[in-house]
Length: 313
Ligand code: NAD
Image (cartoon, rainbow, N blue to C red; front, side, top):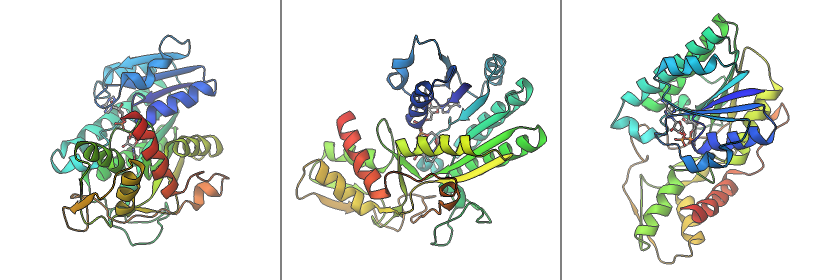
């Protein structure tokens, strides 16, 4: 198999590249503009026969078109500006990610690359009822511009697959955590506590409760779904069934850092930022029915990720 991974130098992308290389993919190309990706995440592949790095932006339609001309069986499309919070200050992140996805799909159509695997997000569900959500829940009305962009990209992928005889695998990820992550609540708490071990600022009231998925489970689940389903569009929630409260994450980080008497200071309100969905639970029966379930539950995923990041940052 010959695969191109957009965003392959990022947190999730670089773990996927490791896995594809281990599984003996004939060719693994990373296509990344390094806006948040890192050289050291993929350094160990450089110079290997299967590996190629294209340092470029998906906004440059000519470069992705030229690269796909080389011949690929599948594109794993993970490139995006992944910061949900940024949307409040920079709503244009939605425009950038949608255009990047359009350019990729258009190049795939022209170069006859038939399969796309996409990293979507739970944020497409918006402020939905407090029950574990299934893939067929609707109407989908995201409350963040990030979620809106993901939903628009899902729609583009579905339309290209149906119009140009392609196949798509769309995975709506929970919060993915673990080694090499460069943003998110665990990363933030560790950074803040390293700066001031006496006090921790917590965005919102700390009662936000969401599903966390460990990185190895994310990669396993994505590849499992990709290999075991073959409809024109294959849509899966990918997360854990449980959920972890922000206050508990704060306590776990404090504990793992060996700190005592840390004062928690809340910024207030029921959510961390505009566009934050404070409570979210996934129904993952669809992927479970194919025979896959995450190895680590939400709290375990958080605990493992804290330990990973304490070693790394
Ligand atoms: P990341 O920032 O580590 O990875 C994104 C990568 O895409 C980076 O390497 C970045 O340099 C690259 N990139 C961004 N825009 C690009 C462009 N226009 N052209 C080329 N490269 C570009 O983030 P991540 O956490 O690894 O996220 C990977 C994907 O999974 C993203 O699509 C993200 O939206 C999605 N996702 C992540 C989570 C999570 O919890 N981490 C949850 C849901 C969905």
